[in-house]
Length: 594
Image (cartoon, rainbow, N blue to C red; front, side):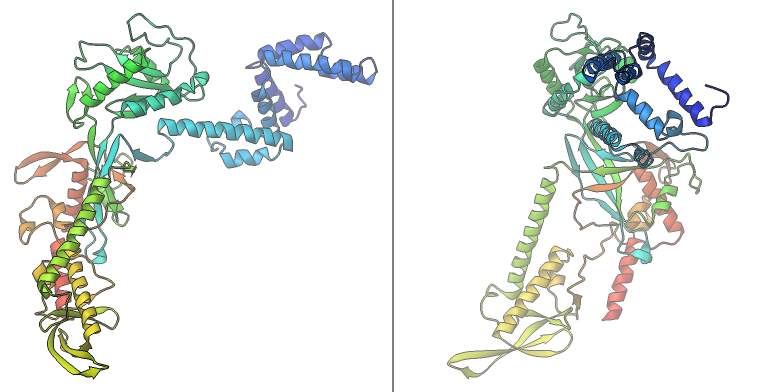
């Protein structure tokens, strides 16, 4: 470089110096010797111009020099380094700086448009190939969905949630739901073996060399320090693990990843750095040994998987806990009260949102294929039972001959103005003559709104069926007692398009004043369906201290319960209506509307 070189020329020289004296030093030295010997491409073209060489004699010589350069380091990555420099993409410009954000994918692709078309094609194909590989590795490691954790395992079941109406009169139909998720976090041997076979496909891309195996019968020695071999591993410390040896499945993600997937029969799949795996598992206190007999490894895996069939709070041997865990996820209408939930989660006592406060995780729960089946069957059974109850109750109401001809005393219903349904009873039967030899009957019905309506046989049959259907809705969906559902002693108007379950507080009348579990004051029975996929908030699994007035001491409660209780306590201080108060107000509104 010269002093009068432009800044762009100086930058180019700097790039070439870094490239040729760094990763391509051997290539640079080889090419310098070739140039001294007159074997440069430029020298061959000069020979072609002056006629001392022909195309036929030059081409084999150039091919020979290209192959020699490839052997000492010339590859596609070196060409990309130069091509990207030509469009302004350097290591410095692509990295983050004090006033510069790192180059993103859109900007990178936009810079690639500055290349000629053949280079664009090669560069984009190279980029997409590596992108697909990174996505595949991330999915295999369970890290693809950044920001959202997926609750997975051998089986996952979502239980019927608890429902809390925290917004009072402002939104009395919106509830925060607390779901209990039962997860079997373990992994059976069939799934582990499938992952093992998939991991074998990465062996050609791993960063390990040959692995020596120490003597030890079925189980060989651990991998060499320089690499990690994908496979089943065993912890052979029998003085610690007396019930069954600890089993591991370790999958090396290859040269392009610094991670390994570590799988246990009782804990499922987790991701750790390669250094952690080497230091803590292969060369730490564990000194795991590579299993050379896969069928024997699978048999040992099954033994530990079966021993782990217990709650995650129980141990089946030292350092080994059960695979069944319970998690609690907030869902429903949480956005309107999200700020209050976050403030309630701050156990330091301040009402401000601070950076050091505990933040919940966003989790996605996808029940396993058969995990929801029992609940669905229960729902179907309850629905069928409800239908049977409806049928039996209406049969009892209208008599055993409800399917026969209408009679005085049978109950009917009539839709008014397209929405309101009034109940009534057949009060009189009279005939009004004959028509073509067929006796035509007329029935007089009296409804709760005070009106009398004459109906023919077909109209009365429809009215009886409507009454039975409405009783079925109230008994099956609103859980109303049969006697109340079939009563016509009072005027009752029901909107057929907006029928909803009656609000049912958890606490009975008067219990609100005696409970310390403030969240139960806002809790109601939940009659909705369990979702197929749940996305919500989950707080850390740890215990917090809560002062109990009845015990006159601090007690420990789970984090999720702490959040609920603190939120409910704050709402009570603000004068928010409880579930019982909302029910009483709704009853008063219904009474006034009659």
